[in-house]
Amino acid sequence: MGRPERAATYDFRVFARAAALKHGAPDGEEAASGVFARRVTPEMIPRIAVPRDELLAAPLDHRAGFIVSLIDGVQDVETILDVCAMRRLEALKILSDLATMGVIALE
Image (cartoon, rainbow, N blue to C red; front, side):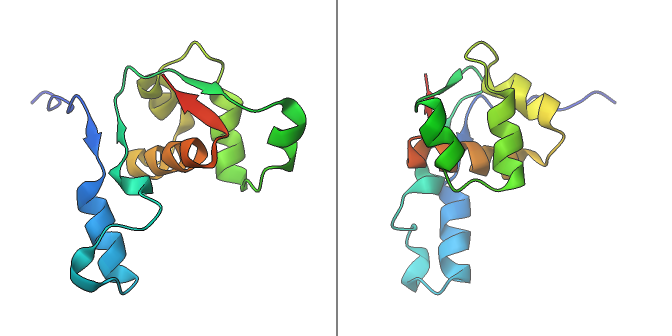
């Protein structure tokens, strides 16, 4: 039995509705930040978008810091997901959060 094919994109709208319901938003409206609505494709290349001093001052937890340490401007999202040893959804959310904060750019 082989592995199922992976989807070409990750659509966070389903998770946005679930998160909104969990946090009490009416009718599953998406979070105001739109974090979960961002589409992330495995081929996207994340790169650091802020100077080093701003990166060091950013409010990142240990998981986000680890993801940032894997970003070199060469590896694509799929490779980072494979290497980081986190649940895919968790790592994708962190990447999305970092992009929303302006710490990284996804190209």
